[in-house]
Length: 461
Image (tube, rainbow, N blue to C red; front, top):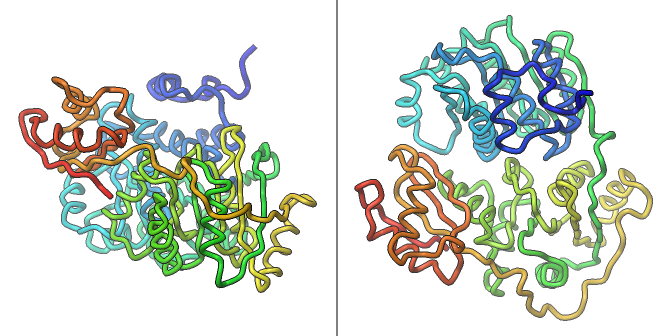
């Protein structure tokens, strides 16, 4: 008897199915099982699913399955609210497509120069993943044509609306053919989502798996603080309950920078992610956190969109969000894949109303009041175990992870077990190595030619 949740029951191209098995995708998640069959048949779908539900693989497989890889024209467009999410989505679609030859997937986001993007667009990609503003700019310049578009995806549509992208979305829709498939994914269903669905979709199948998903195993605390002791309280909470990867949410970018500075001054491996960083800085921050070169990431809700770290130990709310539903999305980043998670919120007396609104969304007694233990001592868990080394070459230099690993470990170099994740981007690469081997790794990568060429390497702090 066939497994009703196996990818093998789907009408997917053999190359896609074979690759799924290789990367360890065997059974569909709830959102995949409910959306993939109608999407593969060509239906429009409006889906509500939580962060980490597997929605990217769902719409990624659907759009890849119908691509004509022999025809270089834009056949799929995925719009995302932030650069980080667009990068993450593009990375996942590339991973899903790696067994299909000659598939070109291009990311178009703001914060980087137009020139390199224009050069990449001289040969039309099959799939574009981008933010509305930058995609619209290319459409206006005529550097992107959507006449042959088959699939339009609006990912995290609720966040796009929150960020004020409605005008850009309307303008983009004027460039896309009416005869297309439109897939809309959202974590929440405000009235505006129904309105936009009515405008862009044709009789969509509505899927909502948020109530059916297995609840995450997240222990939730709230702790009383004052405005004056909030920073010290956060430090104590991190040292009492934090693990090796912790996400701290702030409501403003000013708080992000201030909290990061305070924690760094206390010897905590903290980094901040907010709107004042340019794209290379944002990329570096996300890489350092994901590869365990930093133990605490402080971010705003918008900046954290696109963060994809499955083994996050804990989420800390430096301040409660203004909207109760945002709390649910924040803490949903821990306790994934069957792991236990922890969420700790610092609450001033003036935030009591927010706390009550959040508690009303959850089963009774879900959030427990706790006092933060004792003095803010030390915690080995908050000491990063890895250091990031940046190399001045990347995919455009035809570098591969194996090339960097080979250079690192050759002739008495760094032991292989000291090397962590390797992340390649267009013009640079990042390698995580154990702290003790960081200087040796940087020297090895600087002095040893890689594919016959020498590159600069430096430790990122």
